[in-house]
Image 1: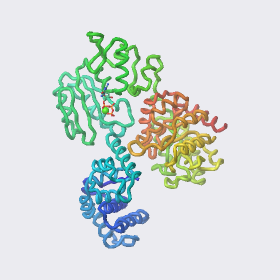
Image 2 (image 1 turned 90 degrees about the vertical axis):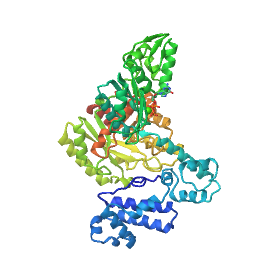
Image 3 (image 1 turned 135 degrees about the horizontal axis):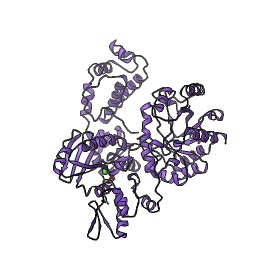
Image 4 (image 1 turned 45 degrees about the vertical axis):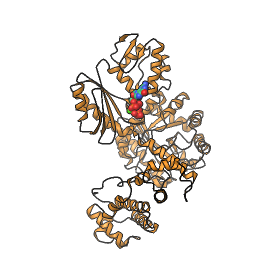
Length: 590
Ligand code: DGT
Ligand code: CA
């Protein structure tokens, strides 16, 4: 389990308004802080119990506080009562603040290590004096944990693996988290009169699912002015380097950004170089060399002759290649494909005709079915596929038979109201531990489409998990498989699954695989999309939207689809409404 704190690690000035959820969260955090400080476990448990009871409360919490009736809640005695009152009336809690400041900051950070809880962190402090992650890593390497009571070789290995993962995650950000800010910087540079050309570069331009930093290349004849301008943009928090060719800054959001300043003549060469990837650059340089050319970030040469190029396309053409889109520049066969004239014509936003995997407030979606439909209509789409959770997903308000009947009736009515726009009836059916779907056949047969999904029992062996999903794909009612690896980017590793075998099975049974467009998932991974395309498996780019704004996550999915070499014909939801009706009814009648 990984601890998620809302306030720990942050300066808590005051919270306004203090809702029940905020109080619950702070009580939970106090319980953890008490464990970290090695207090009597009863004390910590008292806070946990109070938090749990408060969470279950279904009367008006704020009214209870105002009427001084908090002690009616089981587990909330006089002392806790006072603390909650203080928190609700002032937005702060002195006890919580002082407890927090008594804990070494490194201990709070250690809570982010998977598999390491507060009790163990305190034990490590008591017995080995460990205060920081660095010290903990060193102690693991020196084998110091194997001897401690309650630890052992296996725990030590797990902690080391957890530290590795944390380090890897810490260095990177989600594409979606960085892109808006990068575009702001880009716009500010475009507005500057000293800039003649400017572009994003690096992993962001290549549309990688996670990025380390923002790379920008700008052409300017007034490098000094431009460096000053960039370093003084309001988004910049600190400057780590500033010269005439490169400015490195950290933005207020904590993201680093590098601006390279080059001459107009160098611009395409610098852009190609700093877009990368490094592997693509190396392969390109090798190809240039074979053709008697030399290529680097400054230019292109035949012997001592400098060949003028005004764009990246011109550089590629001197290498006898067509333009290779940045998304593909990963040395995954794009140079060979370009050489053979077999580069894919990448799918584009305008090719998308409809969206599947949309939740409503029938299960855990935030909005009504009609408002999701309204948004899809506004987006100019031809259809939407509603798929709420199935009955086993009790935590997400999974649909019972009566709910499904009610939803289908509503869909029939809305289909009349919104024609020619069409709503397909679907479900996101849990794949049960034995690989079966979550409803009897008669009910499964009432849907236009079924998305099969793993939401539980993640810890199976690779063989078991692959077998479980294989069985779900063999089910005649399954249309597509949701988020095939279950990963959450920078938070949860994929479950153990042989994805090649899953793609092969999908190919054999003509099933569709989802490319989940939620920026935390982007799953199927783009590398696997390349393989799926080779096996002619159709991919559905799905928003997995839980509110109407979530429908626009589709744009992240399209970027990853492009990165995975997908063309319009590879993507299920590029089918027109008419073709989609045919596709789904053919599937159903089989
Ligand atoms: P990131 O930042 O880890 O998300 O990924 P990138 O690709 O943006 O990497 P970054 O920022 O270190 O470098 C930007 C580009 O600069 C990279 O994609 C290719 C180029 N580059 C950097 N270092 C090298 C290198 O050692 N050799 C070559 N050929 N190119 C490099
Ligand atoms: Ca970068």
